Image (cartoon, rainbow, N blue to C red; front, side, top):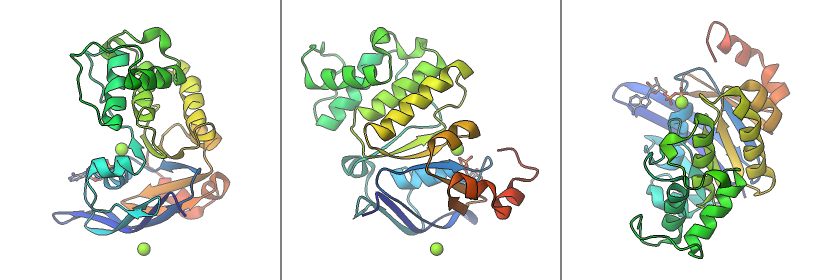
Length: 249
Ligand code: ADP
Ligand code: MG
Ligand code: MG
């Protein structure tokens, strides 16, 4: 049973064809890098899979369940999680409070940020666990807005893991982070995949990171999927090479 299957997926807005006839299948436990020039449709693909946008054509199946028109919360309860290209943390809330909110939401509890959390509270325990997983136990009480870019990205991953997803979509997890944070972020993503067993789709422009992590690479171009193959095969693919000529990755 594939973790994720996309069949004939398309999005047309007004007269613009944003995405067209995208087909692919991802096996459980696979890690896919999604690359392509700016405007290729990578984030749009994630928005369709996660339910931020509805497709105008095609089907999306998650862990065997069709989710094409499902609301966002039903996709999340079916095991889907994602991060966003831009930070979506609450800047005035602490690291613990940010992650705890996600854990509470998953547990179905009330979204009480006013209630003082006890240390034995289930959501707090989950949050402390995923914060430890991303190496930020020393910053539990720090306001998210005061963190470095790299640490914000790590907290976003802790937020994601607090919902215990099986399929995760990471949209440029290294974008804008200091180069010194790239190895630790890479290790966190590798752990998410190898230790947690998550199926991962990751849009990322750091090609050395992508090639070092992924099983297969999906190449998007002008709203279409140009190729989905092993890193070596994709790099040797003449269609991919010509699509990239003169364009910034
Ligand atoms: P990428 O993430 O690969 O850089 P995007 O998916 O963000 O690309 O965008 C793909 C194309 O779709 C771009 O040309 C963008 O302007 C357009 N686009 C994305 N979302 C919308 C929308 N909601 N309405 C109109 N155009 C959109
Ligand atoms: Mg097709
Ligand atoms: Mg994008």
